[in-house]
Length: 227
Image (tube, rainbow, N blue to C red):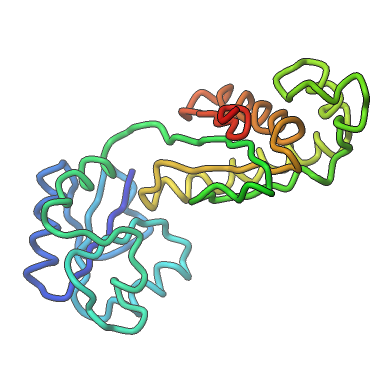
């Protein structure tokens, strides 16, 4: 079930957006409530939006907030708090995307801190807390795709704690991202050169996430792919 809440600067804007979501198969409801559990629901907000949204947040109700049109200039209103700000041409595609039962895409990126953090990363993990295989003569010239580097990194207790903690955290948070219409998420793993520790962690987390079966998982080994 996806609960979408619609706001806008005028009643006409709100109504037009609601109709676009209805055309995509959403059912209209008059208020945000805990018992909206069947199918995809769209709720128009016209008066007192800031207070209504605060109450929904306090009750732990997950929703995707869509603002149709320009800034309403209301403090804590729907424009300020929107997960999606759209104009008319974007409404149909957004309604289709939010209503689709598609898998979320999670991309695991390995990078070097000296080259900059990947743009739009939802989570950045610093792998420099782990022992560096670069300082082992037989491992220096290998990258994280090599089983010997993977074993060196994953044999460290801290690596397992880190990966287990990430899986637990994502298990709790991914449903909340999806409920708000976010269907793509990037997790970035950084180390000194972006070739060894970060690569091992990115590949291992991607393997674990792929095993869930409910996600599309991508991997980007930024520094290796640029060589």
